[in-house]
Length: 90
Image (cartoon, rainbow, N blue to C red; front, side):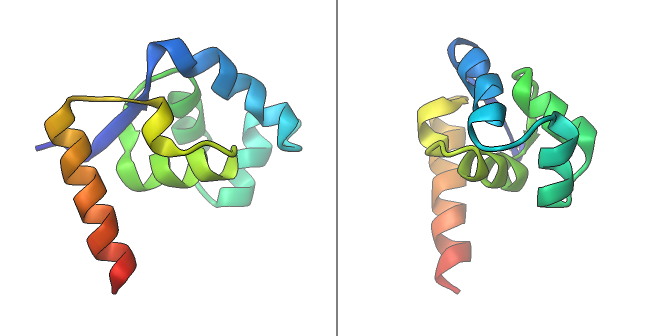
C-alpha cells in the first residue's frame, strides 16, 4: 500500500491561496520553514501525491485539518489515520 496522499482536486485553489494568508510570500518560503524540498511543496499545492508525513506537516502549517483536504481511497485514509495515531502516541 502506498504512503502518499494528495490534495483533493476541489481544494487545490484554496490551499494555494493559504500560502499568503499564512505569511508565506512564496512556495520556497514554506519549503524552507518546514525544511522540506520545494518540489514536495509544489506537488502538494498542485494535487500531486506526496508522502503522508509531508502532507500532514504542510496541511497543518497552512491551517488545514488534513482530513478535510485529502483525496484518497477510504482504506488508505484509514491506514494513514491509524498510523498517525500510533506514531503520535509513542
